[in-house]
Image 1 (spheres, one colour):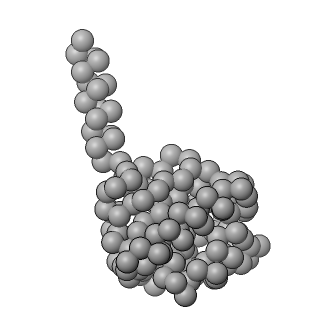
Image 2 (tube, helix red, strand yellow; image 1 turned 180 degrees about the vertical axis):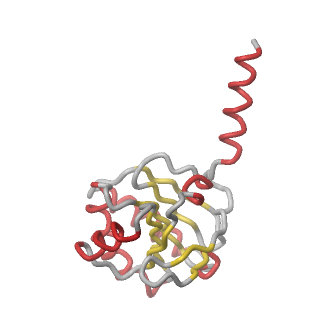
Image 3 (cartoon, helix red, strand yellow; image 1 turned 30 degrees about the horizontal axis):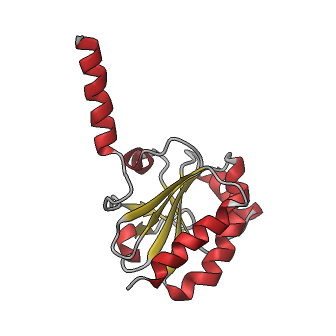
Length: 162
């Protein structure tokens, strides 16, 4: 019985700290992958943000980045931002990925995975759509090319809200 209670307590503690839909997105400041400039999530307050945790070895990320880049270009003027957080320990791996797949959105580094842990990222990529008020509205695991339609619909819905 003690083991069951201990497992329940650990499970509850783990899920209580997980980022969930309806909760405020945990705020962070991380260095830019490009030039190490500190960038905070707060800088994007008032915008709809697609927060994407990724790594250079992630095959679905190679599919998602070009599609996210197109979506960012299409909706940026309406207040949409993509913030991609690279989880590679070696910065060079993320840089090589971006040489192969160039993008125009913000890319940050979380080499120790501290914020990936805070957000409870369990698969690559894991993304969070955050509304203009900083509240997580959708969590998306993995990526295939058909996903972009559903994601764009949710983002467009949030952009339309005052």
